[in-house]
Length: 438
Image (cartoon, rainbow, N blue to C red; front, side, top):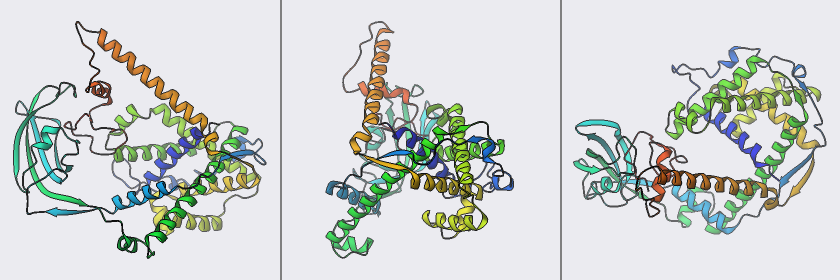
C-alpha cells in the first residue's frame, strides 16, 4: 500500500517553505527584503477557483492510514540520549596540549607548489581530533599542540581523491585558536530537574514516552489527512491556473530550496545538479498550484471561504503553533500570502477528513510497498555500481580491480568535492578538500 511517496514530496515542499522563513526574512539575490513581495499584488489570490477546477468526489472518500505503534522503552532511551547530546556544553581548555577527542578551532591555509588551491583554506573551523573528518595526517599534526600555536606540516593527498589534488603534496599552515572538550550532562535526577518540571527519572521517562506516543498518533492522523487531500486532487480535473499564483509558488519554492542549499553548505547551482533539476522545481510548483486550486474550490463549494476575521483568528493560531510571539513577526517572515495558502489548505483538509471513511491498516502492511521499492532501488544502485566498476576495470591495460579496504573509495569519488562520509546528508562547509574519504 504505497502511500509515502506523495507525503514525502509534500514534506519536502513544506520543509523548503519553512526554511524560507527561518531566521531571516526572505531576501532576493541582492539581499533586498522581499517577504511581502507577493503581498504587494493584492490579486495573487484574487481568482475564482471554479474557473480552473471541476471537483470530483471529495466527500466520503475511503481513506487509509497506518496504525499507531506503541512507543518502546528503547525509543524512549534513544530520545533521551539525543536530548543529552543536544544539551552538551563545550569547555575551553587552556592548561594543556591537544588530545584525541578535543575540539580545536583552527585557521588553516594549504598550498601546492607554493600556490593556494581551492578548498584548502578556511578560518574558524571546528574540528574534533580523532573524528576522521579530516585526513589522518592532518589531524595527527595538530595533536600535542597548544592553543595559540601555529603549526606547519606537509601531507600527500591519496591517489584516490579529488582529481585536482590527488597524489599531490601540500603544505599546510594551521593556527590553533582554541581547544575545547565536549561535556555531556550526566543522566540523573539533577539533570531531569534542570530541564523539566519532573522530580524523578521515572516521571520524566513516562512524560517522554507519552510525548512520543502523541507524536506518533499525530503523524498517523496527518497521513490520513494528506491521503484525503491526495484523493480529492486525483478526483478533480484542473485546467490552467492564474499566472500570478504560479509565479508566487515558483518564487517561494526556489527561495526555499536556495535556503536549503545554503543549509547544506553548497551553492544553489550545485544543488540543482545533484538533487533537483529546473524541471523538478516546475513540477513541484505545478503540484502546489493544483493543490491550492482544488483546496480553494472545496472551500467555495462548502461556503467556507476565508474572510478577514477568519484569517486573523486562524493566522494567530498558526503563529503560536510555529512558536512566534506575534502574528506580525510570523507574517514578517513568511508573508501574508503564504500564511493564507496554508490556512486554505488546512481548512480543506479538515473538511475532507471529517467526511472521510477512515480505514486503519496495520503499520507494516501500510508501508510494505515502500519497503519493497526501497529495496529495489538499493539493488538497482548496487547493480549500476558493479557495472561501473567492471567498465573501469576493463578500460585500461593491466588494471587490477581492488576490492579490498579501499573499494568504497572508488565508489564515492564521483560524489563530488566534499569527501566526508555521508556528506550528502550532513550540512556543512563544502569548501574543504582535506576531509577523509573513509
